Length: 47
Length: 460
Image 1 (cartoon, rainbow over the protein chains, first blue to last red):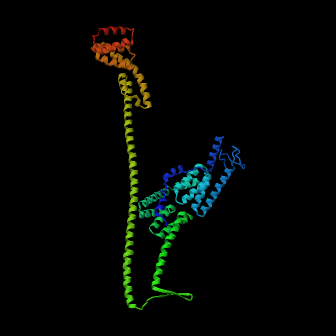
Image 2: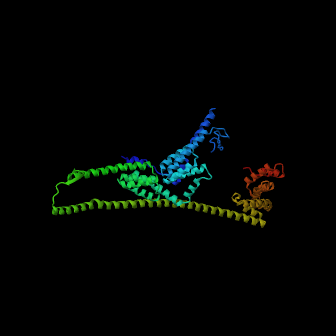
Image 3: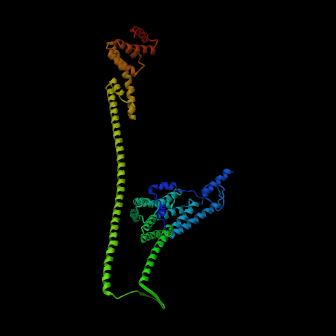
């Protein structure tokens, strides 16, 4: 059976328009190529 | 495709022609990212928006610069009512690729309609407000607020989901189902909506099962059922033909049922309607209050700004007036100069604070002061000397002191100033100025005379 209180906790306040900047800045943008980059740098430093 | 290491354009080879790094795995990653994008696109086309978001996020985790994936992710989020998240994705996309980017069109489309954007922002605020109502247990107010939100922003999925949850809480299952259907019309595989529908099915199933069970029990009391061949025959028990008495009883029962229906159905419905109207009014007043408070604070801010501007204007006017007065003084000094009243001109110049003048004013001041100064010193010396000769020592002191203050190389003025003080009987000043003559002009006749007169002064 559905637990109403628990379900309610899953709903979070929605960001407003003036918070777009924060949302952009807090977006995690690292991808696999960044990872590869870091690995390459690490290898070069090791050598 | 560009090399991840140096950014050079890659050819068919598995190594970068510029930096020589192995790009075979990188090429494979880009292919996987594109495959996830294609999967996301396919899902979006059949309105599997939740699935599309998962695939597109995967695509971007592998290649953050997959602009098609990022733009489509923004579009899907926009369709689901998450405008801020959508704008963030488009802004990021624009940041990665400034030219020839579809995100430009999306951002422009949103920005060229500020009224609509403002309306959406208001709905977001109201959605957040309804979440607060839920936390406070004011579910009626939350439902009213959410209905308003969804009448403006029909695609706000989380709004529909929350409203459905609240309807489920208040046992309004058909309404909850309607909201969940709206969610599934927008996003066909929305997990939350599907889960709620499952819960609804279970809740309604139990309810209908209870009703059927009750009816069966009732039937068993009133009738006997048996099977004859292929037919089920239900025979009522204890049915007697008491038509007259039955009519009276039926009428009485009808009246009782009518009264009960009145008491239990119509009156509560009316009360509920009144309470609902009251809640509507409260919500409306709360909205009005919010907007009035916002307007008031904006007016206060405006008033503060105007007050600041007014103070600055008063200050500027005061400064301008002071500057005007200074320039009038300067003009007066110039007039005295043209009338060859050098002392008057000099006196006027001395009243002016040069630093507060404008650049042109300073130039005029310097030019006037250099011309007036020399002549004024000569004039003052002559006036002072004439007064000394005429034994008018007070006038002589006044003119010679001014002369010496203007030009302290005037040794004669200094000497006759000492003499005039001597003549006035002011021995203290006479001693001071004799001493100055002796120190500043040694081995001169002035110095020898001063030494002699100093010796002749009475001791202190």
